[in-house]
Length: 376
Image (cartoon, rainbow, N blue to C red; front, side, top):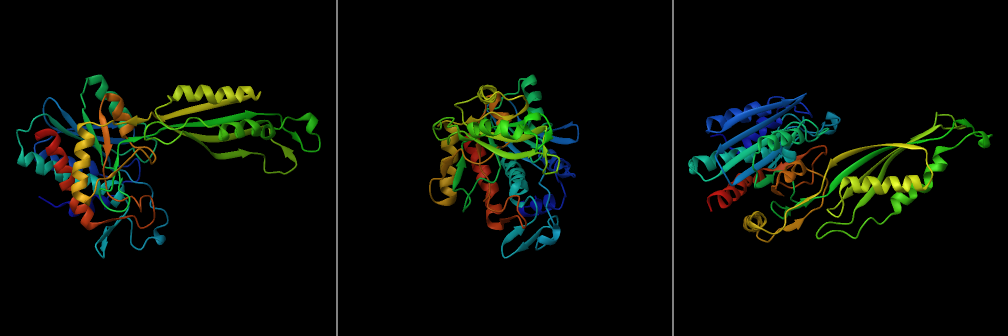
């Protein structure tokens, strides 16, 4: 059985820039099939998804991850080729080392060890991988979740291998995530000459009070361990490129990260109420990236806390911070979801890396979690 470091290096060597899986899932499927797992490949569009399961009935524990990575950026900025794994001073470098090929490799090794030790284990353990987490997230776990819902597939617990740790392995347990809602707002005006504003309608001037109202609103005071909902304007574009032309149109991109106090449709209605209140001639396109989810105190959270306390020597911080993860598509199936993975300091950066000692410890973390939840 190959160790986790060797498998992580094999995965990093595949240039799986989203949504290209570049053969990672085939490599993993071959290993798990040899270990006795049932394998199903689910391809939608340009996206590869892998469902591997062992056992039957409940409870069902799902390990969730992705094989795609973000682009490496300028290769000359890296100390070594991002797709040629290299170990320097006890640290593994390469794109995806932390996010999240290291965790995926640890999942695979933990699963092999678990079924070897418990071939007749109670319940079901499954692995779901996608090549569409870092991209549009349309044909990945979102689409697979629809298939699972149609099949009536039960999922009790979900562990996502996103890099959640802050300074040392196991110092943070992610127990929820905020929802994400994006908008493309187009405000229509009348183009004209800046010297004759009475013959035009400047959409920038028209939109500014409404944008100030949106950005300045206090949406809520937070929800349990969630921070307050936040609206951030990320881009404003207008104009023809000439400084003597009043533009005929303004485009604004903004995003809301929201807690369980809200549903997406409620926020959409509130935002459009503000826009209408300012008399704008506008069109808006919404993209619902995923609703918030939260795992309350219970067996999954308590087990994870105990296991991580053993790893790092103290109880982990329990957090709902950060961006989004594919667990947002699994939680609506009725699953309790947590996230446990390596240190996230270098994710999406040049010279992404993971400590070899952390990587070699991860399979043991996941194995203890699986055994505690399914075997007791």
